[in-house]
Length: 187
Image (cartoon, rainbow, N blue to C red; front, side, top):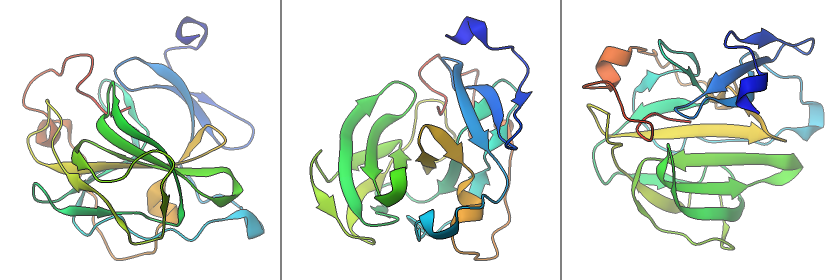
């Protein structure tokens, strides 16, 4: 229950943070550091190439449970790892979204899509085109919102994706034109 979680993030013994995420202030465990997964990891690839314009973590008004990657409207979005499409549709805070279940309890989330190109139940391989880049209502630019979760905890995609020398720009002013409505911000 959101009212049961403090408005300030709570540091957990495992190094995660419990914070209120997105416009609905959903209590979410976020792991911002490099996790020690051993042989339980999944090899993720970038879902598209482009500058990371917003990192995971604290924003002015809310916490952000993923990263935003800028790309032109309609740019193909690729599955970051093989798996089964768990959900393909629309969801509050995400707009058009695809969620893919991977091995070892991982899930990748691709949001603010212009078009979803897969259906729930589809099996996809890494690199398969699953959607196209769109734009959420409050954003200044088109981008993909990308999350990696495992057993309900959001992990920092920048530490699970291959290094590629990206600089992260993080600014609410760059991302939003005006104060977003409840459904405009990322979860």
